[in-house]
Length: 112
Image (tube, rainbow, N blue to C red):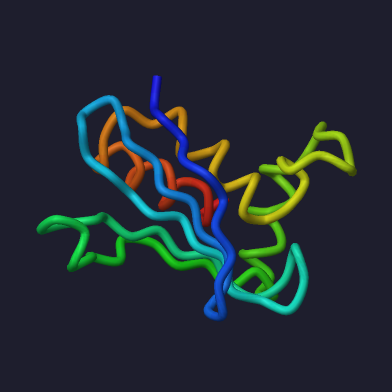
């Protein structure tokens, strides 16, 4: 099972690092004014975490982004972390085994 790090908030947004079963590390980030607006990005951490490769971005205010977020938060308790955009995407990614799996699942998520 993937290891999920702490949720960190700074001036740029809120982020969470996840170490996948493959040993690869991804960073799930949320930038927005509230918990469910703005955008979500997923980046692969490379070279001692000094460089990243963005593999997914989702505008939560677009029609596809609203559908994706609604799909991920369906059935969650409204007051839980999983009901927020970052919490929902972290829960989604933590079940992936590798970066290739993350890419495949994210493409499927936004093409619903």
